[in-house]
Image 1 (cartoon, one colour):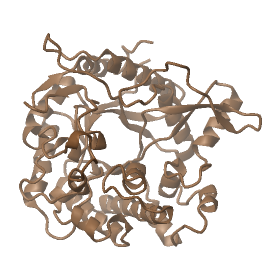
Image 2: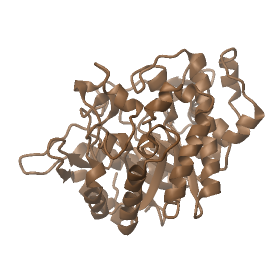
Image 3: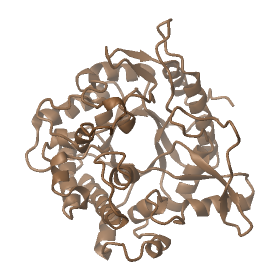
Image 4: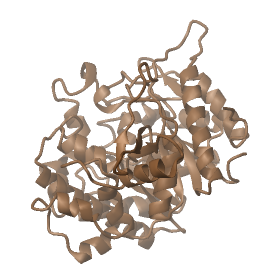
Length: 453
């Protein structure tokens, strides 16, 4: 079976991870610029000041992606590159960069998929309270207006936020991502409420301001439970576990981040679990959050295998000794790309787009001048075969965006991790297509029909 006609085979990046040009052409600082100055925060003291120098090399990069045959490219806009202070004056040179990038993509026949926010929050707004400030949703809406007005004559595919669980939880609860805070859970819940309002307001902006018919989505982390067997009890246990809040103060919950946006309500078990720490939740807020979406974007890298216990509730199934690991020490669990989309579509009734999936690998340019990454080929093939099963079962999956199309700055891990299908030499900025890029090219040509178990 091949993938559906019109399936979008894509690649993804994020602004701070690839662009560089951190202080060029009027760009303002972000919380990640601040985090990278914090001693001991980033592996080997590295930063995204230069990263892949995509800001200057975007034409070369787009040409490489065209050669691979990408149908779509998912990238994010740097909020402080467009609005250096986060609000107020627009930086024309910053906005022009994205204008040129979109033109380059369109000319190459690659559909631009724009994410409005992928973690590089304007530092000046952080100084004013950041996502805790009650005006933060309005700040985001104003920023979205600037971007949509400029790009929507050529961009029709939009995502509001990337992985809010990470920039809120890892950034403000655990302190391992920017801005490096460790707040109490009460403040995390207040911040989450503002972030979800920001999403809703941004969708309203896109709908009202787009110069062509817009397709709007969202790209949270998908926490996937994989049933140990196809037995009905195991499947139901996995489904219930995916959409339950069972751990106290758990910011990774699917439903807390997804139900308000798609169903218009916070989950009852969460309201009960977090009682006493919740911000005021009004009907008008929920109406703002819950705007019609065209697709459910989700980032899936791994899943947890579970089975039904004696009471029917999910219990984890331990991984075998010596189980497969990526270089990020994440388990290789291909079934996540079958069961995740299936369960998410059952609950939310939206077409699915896999907005991120990929693996960190240990690869380098060999003596033959090539980069051999058989593990990435095997990993991606396994996951795509599972995604194909979901499609065969009737799940409406519209696209797959590999994370990432090129090696880049991997947040607190610096340049230690390589996720790309294109190798980047960070000293010379030379790009080298890995074996996986050549393999992906063939997958795209065959629309997945050449995938083999």
